[in-house]
Length: 404
Image 1 (cartoon, rainbow, N blue to C red):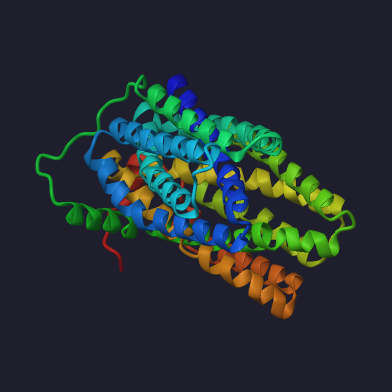
Image 2 (image 1 turned 120 degrees about the vertical axis):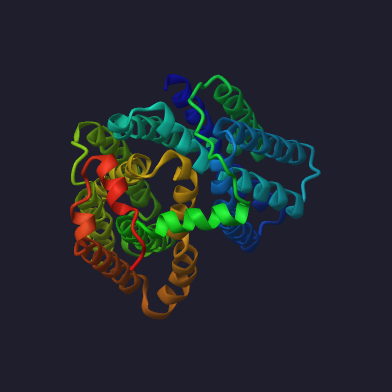
């Protein structure tokens, strides 16, 4: 577990600083925000398109092999991007293409890494293991962006891209040292298309998973549209110190990530469905507070609560899948859940700006908060969600039922 944690943390270091390196490299090349938005959107769509196939391969092949290969591809593509920027030979097409390659590699990495963790950690310690990983990742997420900003401001984004590549390459080497039991191979293998459908069926046959993933999709989309897209605009128009106040709220949110991870270490792993519903409420509270133009000090408190609840929700949701899904299906099911859980985000983010221009950002924020809270109420009304938290073996047997 220590080697796995070290490898994942180094990989997070590359993932955390990569967006800033790419963004400033593209802006330095042509200065067009439209280009950056296009590259970001296309990368997200590629990630969503590749994820289901990545889940199938992570269940068919040794997961360590998939992880190492994905990290090697990401490391080489980022290193090449850095070299092109530093030598002045980068173009929008080459940077965008290499960014897409890195994104595709990430799509293969995530389901394989989640599946590997479930094979090296006992089911009753998965929440604690995911919490420790989240703590390490949160610390990196707090420190790395500021460091990247200093490097870019004093030098070139090419150095950050090169460091990203080195982090991914180091991560691949560390994953080679992680020993884990192989996933049992079925006596008869089917084609990729058949196994993809089996993964979709395994996802669809679990009502609790369908409901909670739908809730995750809805709340993530509302959060991304309200906080990520409209947050800076709200700060400039309604907070006294603008960007400075928004930075304070962001720092409070970052501190909340650590608090939520520590909380996950202490909470019992029962009634996880009810916990997931409750943990979605603080994010809606922050959006509603922004819609009401609450003062900065209150938004900072709400931001810390949202950060704590958000990371607690992520840890619980990930651990729940790893506990309840058979190992031989885990990568396919988590990949399907990731696809469904991200499907609404591009739509909501694309609509947020035009709606804010038409009716005002505060009304859009209020709408996002209302939609998120409605989703929580709907999920909580489902009996399978409220009762979720029984031993894994009992739940797995009970949930293998056809969709009605």
